[in-house]
Amino acid sequence: MPGDGLDVERLRADFPVLQRAMNGRRLAFLDSAASAQKPQVVIDAERDCYERYYANIHRGVYQLSQQSTQAYEGVRGTVQRFLNAADEREVVFVRGTTEAINLVAQSFVRPLLEPGDEILITGMEHHANIVPWQMVAEATGAHLVVAPVLDDGQLDMAGLRERIGPRTRFISVVHVSNTLGTINPVESIVELAQAHGIPVLVDGAQSAPHMSVDVQALGADFYVFSAHKTYGPSGAGVLWGRLAHLEAMPPYQGGGDMIRTVTFEKTEYAPPPQRFEAGTPNIAGVIAMGAGLEYMMTIGRDHILAHEKALLAYANERLQGLEGFRIIGNAPDKAGVLSFVMADAHPHDIGTILDMEGVAVRAGHHCTQPLMQRFDVPATVRASFGLYNDTTDVDQLVDALHRVKSLFG
Ligand code: PLP
Image 1 (cartoon, rainbow, N blue to C red):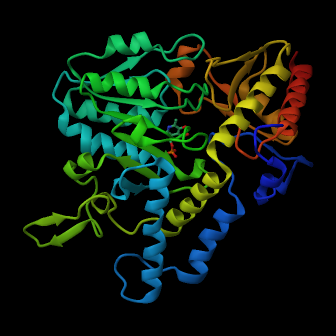
Image 2: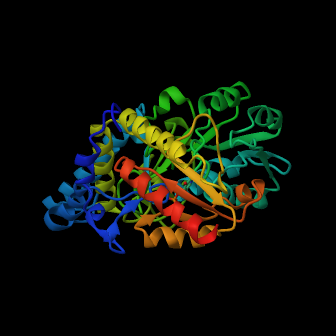
Image 3: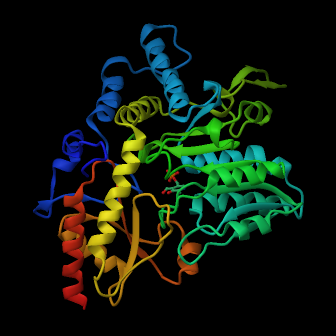
């Protein structure tokens, strides 16, 4: 978009898959909220590891192992910069957001809970930020409390405030909703929680790919994200946690690489972050994740966010007046996510027709079934933007939706 500081044409050339045709049409990839495409630097980083220096890490005395250990451990510093963390020992490598939330639920929160205690989440959480809390609640007799969502897709902050009580032991909130695009005021939520002495986890699965995050300024206790949404590979991700918390937490899984000494009588655990990285990790995946984060930092996350917001505004404008078209999620502060329904056309049919036009979108409940119930829709179609999308992608989407309208209208 003019003036947003991104040379999208040049950036698109970094992504080999975007050069593909789809059903004979130019590919308009509009499903980055599910998983982003990968730039050549990420593909090269993973390939380079396997081709030149792959070996298991931490244990080998030979050079290859030292080299891969160095590359893997070096990514902690990259993540530290990416999040402005105070200490690279606060960076735990995990499989992704889901594993990070489960780790915190089991290792940090579960030991805090007594019957009748409460865990507070919001009505716009991804299943990954609902089910792990239900599991610990079930195991301990605690309850899940849910802050409501307003009709326009904003979090009901008054409702959230009212639900903080003497039994609230933990708050876990999504930073950016993957379904509505709403950017939640996480700084205010953290401030509120701190006033009551309640620790907070911020689910950054949809904020890390789009905006600068400063965990020290944010003040939360945990922040988590997945590499596959930040232009890196799947099967890697980050749990950031305050060092004091990580040091006090028991391990989540036991095995090799997370110990200091083992005898049959007793095991002494390694300090964090190794304590939480049992077993051989996703070595090449973590290294490639680092390349994806460096790629984003080079481009500049403020530019990425401005670009995606401008695209969203362009899409909103172009879709005005399309009969029967309704956006789900109209919060004033949104990231590049456009969820919608159309009268008389099922989201899955819309998705299939768009695919025939080369437009890749997601149709379904987006792992937010309670949110679908809140808005009384079975599913939505979701177009979501990444740094490589341009107005041609949006035009292709809008033209294809006019075609849907002509078929169903
Ligand atoms: N939280 C949010 C907001 C998400 O959008 C997603 C993925 O779509 C997740 C959590 C789960 O992420 P992952 O499947 O990478 O663990």
